[in-house]
Length: 157
Figure 1 (cartoon, one colour):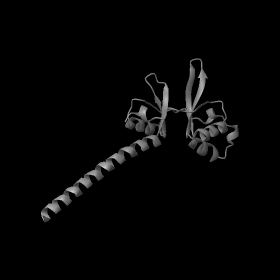
Figure 2: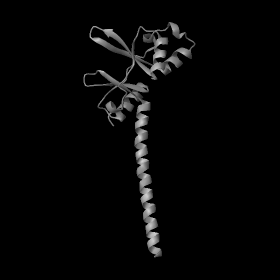
Figure 3: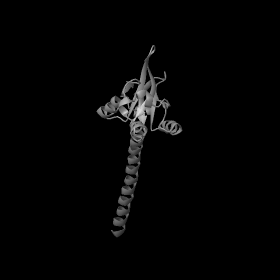
Figure 4: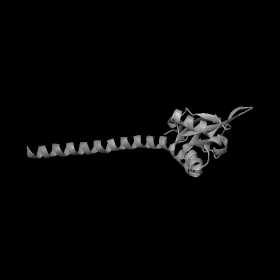
């Protein structure tokens, strides 16, 4: 299972100077749980952090802070977890675990961000694989039942 094939390539990004209320609105409008925070540099956009829905709830609302006056860059985590797009799911899980995050940026060979992978993405993929394994088990049981029925019928004749 290649992370590049599992990741979400459509990421929503915003400048670190934008207000947190705008970030929350973008998350709602685009049905995403995280935004890439980027700043424009002489070399083009540079990812400087990530802000997610948990940050909004735990770091702002639960502390009773006023989200209206907070800039995205003030809240965004600069501890960026990333994984190469050719990595497997185990590598992505290891990166998430070591960074204590639920999402990792996916990068290409030039270290450019090409997507984001979340625990939900990985769980969906593993659920599909488990469903296939369950079908294999059911198929084997059905075959065994059919063979047992055939043997029983043959014995009666």
